Length: 406
Length: 161
Image 1: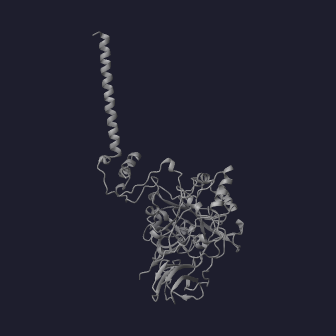
Image 2: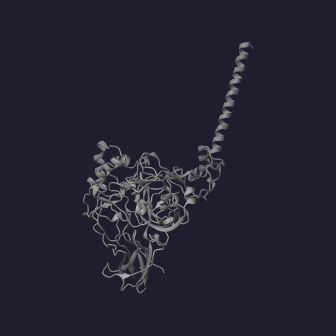
Image 3: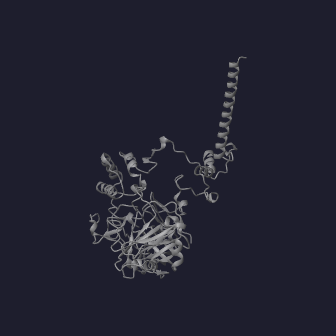
């Protein structure tokens, strides 16, 4: 104890001496904050996350929420999942941060500073649903490789930025533009500086939607480091990997972008359905675009016990990629009967929608409350796992919670 | 006193002087370095109990690869033949958590190694590949889950309204 205290108290002085410079604001560093590289940090404190978040991976950092943590209508930072492919960049200098536009289909290369982006283009704010393409991967059989997300790799925060289409217009594009691909400041896990951990993108039709933003704020404040500070591309309703963090460049391509994690099996599913476990050739895999219809019961937390005769109020959110959710139902008899929930309209396109219902249980016993959303094209969530795919993407099977009536 | 003795005497005095100067300098240097590291001399102050810091056991070299209840503590890997080969080859770039989360057959672990070699700068594993794959396919093998599993690990609680 004595030694620990000794080290902690003198840590700042020692580091200051060692690097020959003051650590700016060192005195105001919160007690729980540990400087990166000095010791294994507590990831929950490091990223300002609730301690009930679930850490899947610490190199690279990957963390998901639990259903009941996502009860708020707007997801705050402490409950927003973290998905990284590489190392979070260090030494971010906001004053000199730039965004460069290049590629086959720009009339000329153009670079903007952060200040220019903020001052030259109109700013917009939207609440946008971001879900990891692999959310729900843990349920696939045979198991799929990768981080074993359960249900918590989804969130709907409020993003503020400028429209990508406004900036693209200012850059000037050739008529053969097909796709945009992003480049970012994160670094490859192997340490190889020539490799990009991830460089995905969007077809032009998605790139020029009103809601596709180059964002610099999340929930009214600077974007947290783990979520892309200081600049992030945001494409709501699509796999969150299309929303590149720590954005430094956008290439406008005359073909489908071929950056890291755009090719092979990454963020792709078989173009035609396959049997579980079947081998699929790379050329038979198609890029995931809009995410499928899905919902979560965020209240109550699973495991609720209530007295017989008392009704249960449930609530949650539903979303449907590019589409709207048109119907929300619940079942307490494993799909034998379905009952409708009241469902709100989204605050804007690509934002999740809120539902609630009041349930009366007919007798004592164990129940599961299953929730099922249906999108505007009349496609509903399956109760069983949807089509198996080699990388375990797009599991939108119904969410359920356990309830006991005593 | 001969001239020679006089000379020797003064040489002795100079040496004495130099030695004491050196000792004083060294003591001053030690004190200054100590003050730099511990400016408020807290190591000499009385034992305090109002500590904000929790003691963490220091990891000694012999504990570095400690195994507790069949688990390699530092990484979370299951104890078994080939463990240290896996620790030394599979946790350089990514966390052990990325391995222990996954369940694959021998063929798919091998395919994953190939993918990492082709795209992620993993080195040639040589003779170590066989025991590594054997370890992974033995301790991290798939289990049948079916099309939907029962809810498990439910923490029951009284719902207050």
